[in-house]
Length: 231
Image 1 (cartoon, rainbow, N blue to C red):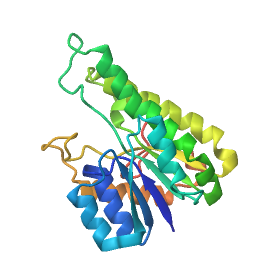
Image 2 (image 1 turned 45 degrees about the vertical axis):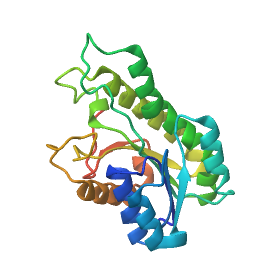
Image 3 (image 1 turned 180 degrees about the vertical axis):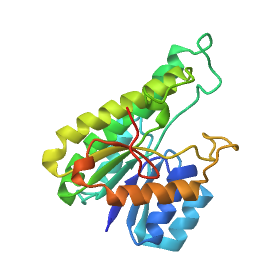
Image 4 (image 1 turned 180 degrees about the horizontal axis):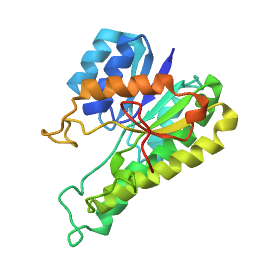
């Protein structure tokens, strides 16, 4: 049973739905976002009261990471979901992609999840059997890339996968497991209206996978259906 969950990027889409589903199953949730005063989060706060704590967090801001973590006052965290992501290069190609765009996606998608995880390491270790879930993408898979393009987004998610494996090795002594998860092609602002999977289906699948991860799967890359994904 997951007791305390810390989730980044929760104002909409998969992040918001994960907050909703974990609350409905009795977990205490720390929901973070750059602007957590949205109607959806405030409505959940009104319904679930002390079970939901809303924290302001820009995952690229080191001081905001430190402030958010300090507000937990050392409380154990059973599950960290690094969900915040960026795909602003969707319309770029080989000719139009700017290095600034690439660097920003790398910061949000690969560097920030490491920084958040590092800051929460004592809280995760205090749980004694914690899980860090990196919301990655099949677009970060080398084997699955048959169409090319999406240079900055693909490489940022491939980097996140590499971070996942290293953290899985380095945090094993704390009793903390780390996995990369593909949420599916989901109908969100990022995934677009034509995506075949809705947020409820994706979040439900992700929850099931997270709750079922065992020691031998540490450092793995999995679909929201539970199937392993090749690197």
